[in-house]
Amino acid sequence: MTPLVQVKSVSQKFGTMCALDDVSLDIAPRSYTVLLGPSGSGKTTLLSILGGFLVPTSGQVLIEGHDCTGMPPAKRPTTTVFQDYALFPHMTVGANVGFGLRMRGVAAAERDKRAQEVLKLVGLPEAFGKKPHQLSGGQRQRVALARALVVEPSVLLLDEPLGALDLKLRRQMQEELKAIQKRVGTAFVHVTHDQEEAMALADHCVVMSNGRIEDEGPAERVYSKPASRFSATFMGESTIFPGRVIGSGEIETVFGRWQLASDAKPGSEIVLALRPEHVVIDQKQLLPLGEARVSDVVFQGSFKRVTASLAKDESLTLLARLPADAAVQAGDMVHFACDPKHVLVLTR
Amino acid sequence: MRSAIRLATVIYAVLIYGFIFLPVVTLVLFSFQATSFPIPPFSGPSLRWYQAVLGDTRLTSALLNSLLVAVISSAVATLLGFLAAWGFARFRLPASALMRGLITLPLTVSYLIIGMGLLVLFNSIGFPKSLSAAGIGHVVINLPLCFAILYSQMGEHQANIERAARDLGAKEWQVLTLVTAPMLWPALFASFFLSMTFSWDEFVISFLLTRFETTLPVEIWNLLRSGLNPKTNAVGSLVFLVSIAFVLLFELVFFRKSRS
Image (cartoon, rainbow over all chains, first blue to last red; front, side, top):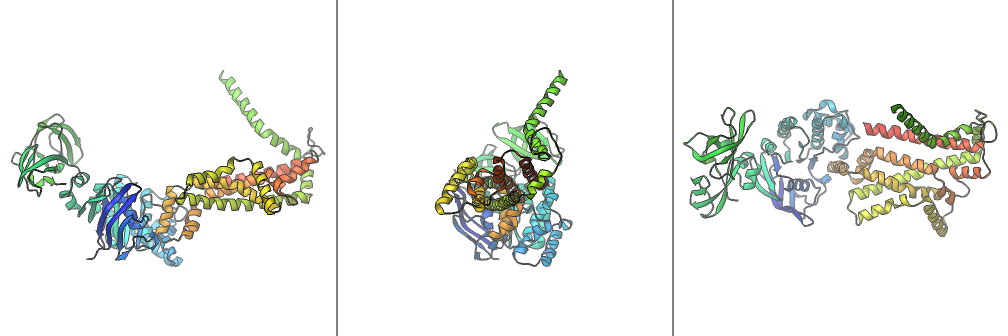
């Protein structure tokens, strides 16, 4: 399948600051792509380039096979849902949603009909005659989505759309966004710094840092087999510790010598990561991690989040997610272990 | 002790408000004087002098001239101020800060200097003294104010709303007329009405730049040269009434808008 959007070696410089450094990315039709990264990673810059609000310093953007690099936003088959919603405050919700159609010369009656349909799609059929200031944050978000969807773009761009909502509403809107995307079949490109949001939504997850793509692929793969140290730490928590490759299939770590495959050359220094849910206690048949003193236990309902410092090396903090009924308390000395197949070997 | 303090604050307040409003109250009161001099004792009330004002065609035509100059010059100042503010807020211009400073500079220059400068300029290019000349002068003094008000209202949030309009296919003139201007409606209204009040009251520039047809403040000055007369009180009260009407209208529209 040919990609719907092709970003080819795009760089963006602001003065001496390099916001995007030779980024290439393909976006498949009907897919939900999430650009994930901390602030300053270049994710919003990339979205602005896709939307046409920025012309990149170098590189090319193709949408549906056409070169759109220098094309203004109005001419592109893209629309954007802005972080602050950017609704027109002086117009009714119906007029907001119908605006794009009005610009395309659609007659008023037809415009209203289609605006109503899209409002129904986003779950706000009763808001047609209201003004934006009469709506709650979540409702405004839906209006912004409806306004962008009504013109049937090939690609819908969402700039941290859920950033201003509270946690509960954010999770609910996530599900709805995903459902709406599946229903309309438009490709969505969604920018966020929230990794849970990324995992919940993404068909294709793109982790960005310092203007580069660190890792991309299905969210599950990016989480379970991160390509780099950055993406391992950004996508979820983990215990990170150094290791040295001493022979084929053997790695020296602070926990001892482990039989682990890696493609790094013998003698090279690498980094290993362990997800907290893969750290267990009192199971000596697994790979032992040694004794550690529990420094903190946080009960989180379905599990306990435990931090412990290793007896052998107190600078190393072990992070574990233990069952809610595990009897551990701060100050306890506990034997930790893990399954070797869950240890992540990160060569960069 | 406490009651003494309270008494002192009441006296202070009465004195302050008296200081501000007593001249106006006196002016309005003696406009209703029945006899020929606006001095105590009060002999009214009588509408005799209002009748005289409304019967004096020089005064009534000056009043209409003032309104005309105020409306047109304020509309022009608001339009130019809006376009300038939009340009400075939305485009990266060379020496933007310096240019913004220059555009607001007339706020600090005395009307006398501006009036004399325009007089010399108009003389040298052969532009006659007229209501149009005074109107141009009023645009010069009000444009910086309109610019400052409107520029302060064009933030990043508004810029994003304009971006959204462009993203949905609006052309630049459509963005301006369908989004930017309606969105800034309260600020546009405020600029227009403040300009109206300033233009309505303005004397020095109108005095210097008009000749045969003139504005009301200049006509009142002419009237005063022939001595005190309750007629000047009556016309002054009318001017005051119109100013109050402007302010009330402004408050009504602007504050009702900003609350919603």
